[in-house]
Length: 237
Image 1 (cartoon, rainbow, N blue to C red):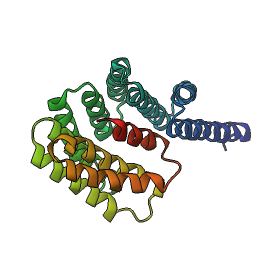
Image 2 (cartoon, one colour; image 1 turned 180 degrees about the vertical axis):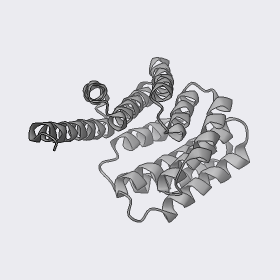
Image 3 (spheres, rainbow, N blue to C red; image 1 turned 60 degrees about the horizontal axis):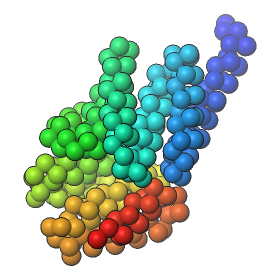
């Protein structure tokens, strides 16, 4: 029979680990990127020490997203390079530990490629991410919508818009039972990307998608990052 002290230690670790990740995620979505990175670092050390691969991947992914948010806020290429290095490190860690989240690593690599304007690679990685995604759910719709952006930026504009709209449809059709905050994040992000992509090519459609994004963002005070992105897009000539 397992020693009670060992059981209690395991429970304490699980609670503290989950707590760290939850706190870090909340700080990240509030726009407090630096504080979230500090907590993700703590979570990574805890996860490595206790051989908790699930927590490790969660913390590494969260830290990568925090770097991405800093890039969006500052447009400093340094943060895009940090996103790229995080994605590369995660892929190597996965290979060494035999982790199976292949779809996630393709998606995160594509995220870095997109920030660095390597759109052919972003398209390739996102196609692999969608192909290997194990479920047909709302999150997959978000990934499909991101693929649409990569296609558009890689010169396949018509296919890009159609793919993004398909992603939005998937999100909406699988929204039941999913945290409304996530649905709002995914839908508002997709509409903002459409508004940005079409701003030069079709201003009327761009404004239409911008209004859809604004309606969602204004309905949820938790969408701090999206609000910043909306304000930036509206202030750009």
